Length: 223
View 1: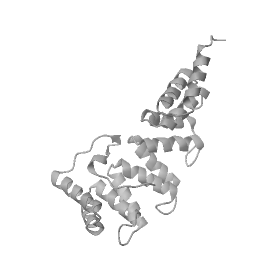
View 2: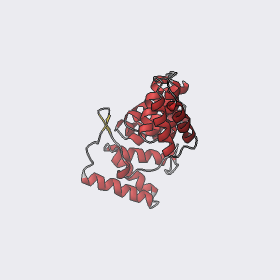
View 3: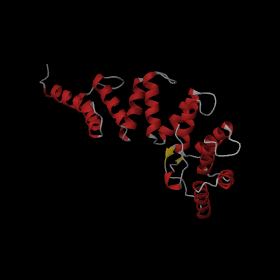
């Protein structure tokens, strides 16, 4: 789980279950958050912690997330995994998609303590619905392999499609393969070719060969 502090320009918000822009911070609070981040980036960890704690108590999800990162990196005097998880939950419930994804990853890997795949996938699904491509790919993979979720090729195809639309090259290739094989979706060689071509255009090394193969198959007259 790779974590970094968030600046205001990095934030994605969730409101009423959909990926929408939340009301912006009041100018004074926005300035306070930016000052806290600048303090952190200058290497002044103790005052940065105090500033993030103050903002987190006032309901700023980015501050709760940044404070969790400091605990996880051991940048506070008394790092605490339980406190980090509680802060991530607070930020995730506040609609911060980055926190939703980080919480899911930490629960899956055990970096937040005991592994909890069921809870991890609940947060992956929230983040995926909020537009996180990484979470969409995780959901697709879990359903495809039956790892932590019921094996369900149709749900896997749904999430791979969302991740592919979001630009994930691996998801493009996997979705193309599913269309080619009729795995979880109705078999459709033209859609398979479309997604193989998308993967090829985005740098997948195996996809160009699949495009040529499907071009040849699609050019054949029907039997």
